[in-house]
Image 1: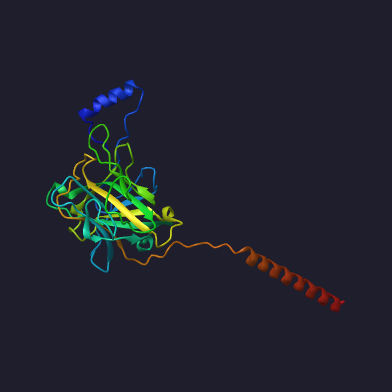
Image 2: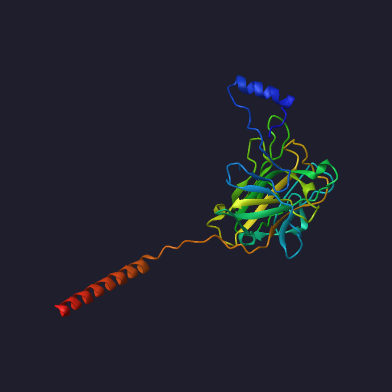
Length: 304
């Protein structure tokens, strides 16, 4: 999906052509504007194979059904809001009292075909009666870290710092990008120095807050090797800037990330016998064969 070329981009494009350079890559806009619509997400070099699915079939997102882990809300009608989960600190627009650390064991499995995914869900809280029910997610970053965050400050030299601030100035609309000290980044929706991607969700397809709006599936293969007790930190930014697409601003309540409680088993593991065990099995088979051969020879001698 392409946006209209803005006048402010023309000087840059002309200069790029004269200097032999290429214009910046255009944003990918992933629409979830109809019930059950799904999109394969082209991650920004980190975490390939993710899928976003429109979801309005969560009949209940109450206690005992879900594990909510972060509410993002800056208050009132604003252009954008962002946040991440942590029990210890509330950074960006994360809501105090509704912000919790989660470990990998808390994130459920989902199987599509033969591929296993880890599933995250978001419940939007925007008005259904006007154009503001179209919500844009411009950034999603997922990190794995040993231990929860403890530093209440964002900035250089702290546990959380900003690699790239959101910017709507042409020629490139930039999504915010953060980094977390001591963490491994598993997935990133929008990259650095290029036009940010966006997921557009029609919140009007559900029954309002408490119904769920999107399922985010991240391949389980990206989490291989991590301990079940590893902390999983999800950062997200809603609204504008950077993507000047129809809809996207915030005009209602909080946006809430959560995981459902289900009983999908983990992917099966294939085990290779230890060398000692395998060797003993071969010796046993060989001994059985020799004994059988000897019995056969004795029987022939008796008959002769």
